Image (cartoon, rainbow, N blue to C red; front, side):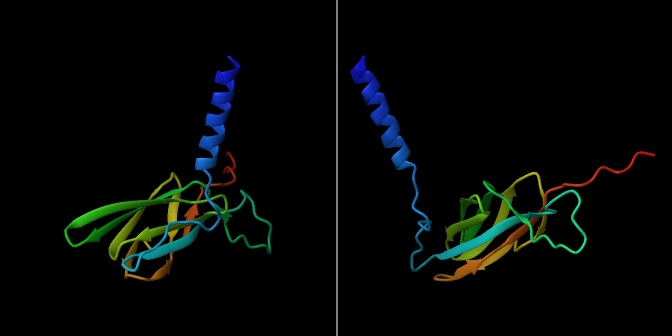
Length: 139
């Protein structure tokens, strides 16, 4: 019985270590690919914002961005997921790539189509409307 408990604990430790990713250890570009990085935020920051203050947006964690890239007759879909601060990174092949988001929020700004050139470092930031509003007064 003790042997099975030890084996189970060893399996959990091994699985946890395999899931770890070093900070900054995102995808590695090749000479014929490009790296796209950016940050995703949502606005407003609160239902009622204080007069005279400006909110640059709240980070959107765990948002999936799906890039569909067209290269000659081939189509490829590559995905990235934002971290806790809303940052993401993905390596894309050269060509025209369009992005789609898996979210309920309304898209406000950011490039929906990218012309990717080999060796390029592209920054693509996005802003969404998260729908936080004060309820309208009842009449």
